[in-house]
Image 1 (spheres, rainbow, N blue to C red):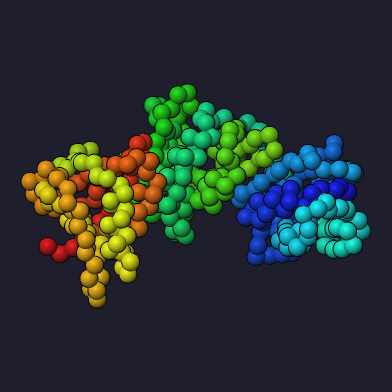
Image 2: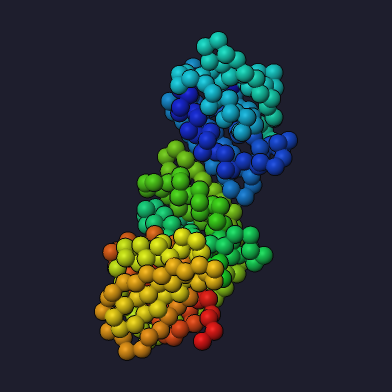
Amino acid sequence: MRFVITKNVLENVIASMQPFLEKKDSSSITSHIYLEINNSKLIIKATDYEIGLESHIDNITDPLDGKTTVNGSNLLGIIKRLKNEEIILEATNNNLVIKQNKSTFKLPTYDANEFPSLNKSENLKNLSMSTINFINSIRKITPAIDTNNPKFELNGALLDIKSQKINFVSTDTRRLAVSFLQNINNDETQFIIPKKAIMEIQKLFLDEAKISYDDTNLVISNEHTKFFTKLINGKFPDYERIIPTTLKYNFPLPKNMLVESIKLVTSLFSNIKITFNSKSIIFESLDEDSEAKTQIDIDLNIEKEFYLAVNAKYLLDFLSMSNNEKIKIGFNESNLPFLLEDDKFFTIVMPIVLEK
């Protein structure tokens, strides 16, 4: 195997492969990147068995068919140090030789036939949805996905395809985030996508791609890139019973004023109390050792004063993902869960319960 390629083209692809490599065990073949020349195309793959990426590169010269594997982290380390000029890569005598001008590097290789297969494309169902809508919907709920929860199904996002709409759902047990789209012609189903996969999807796909799935895998592919992830095998909590059916109060608020006031009182401590009355909203830090307080004068037209106490991060996460200048906030009583709502996106937040 041999080929010549421009440094920045190779570096970009090898860098995008890094999250898909086994990092803890450098003796494992899954710590290696797979390289193959076939019909004047370069095929590059990486996988840790749970998640995988395959890229096809056309702009190479002097190709010689063959395949090999090489430690992905070490390969990137070498490429980064080279000049932005052409690089020659050649597999020979169980080594990958990397040359540029008068510089030469050698890295040991493994048997490419031992590399795991990434072919996950048999008997998959296509998801009829634009990639842009998929990415935008999943991006909004990403902050609420839990990390390292013993209930492993919470370490991912649920795609709940119903007859009329598609819900994207995540929860870290302190909040529930739901983004939704209209379902045109997808079959009803549910599956859970791991958080790591969701983070990578948002980096990899910026335009249209084909989204496919079966009971165990999700595959997203376009002309030059194919991504796969194993789905989480578990049952997501019954999130719909947490969504309030009625709200006593539900009114719009200016997003920028909320963000500014919340950031003002959370410079030292993230837990805050927000009090609503007929003429104003008062923001106070719940830090016992210091005082931070600010106020927005606004006519809310409510009869009874009430408050919410909350970790400000949950509010700011929602506000950072909302699209409109005004968002809606809905309550029933102080010390009960409350609703934040924007266009096709809402979050239900568990409050910090304060003694009355």
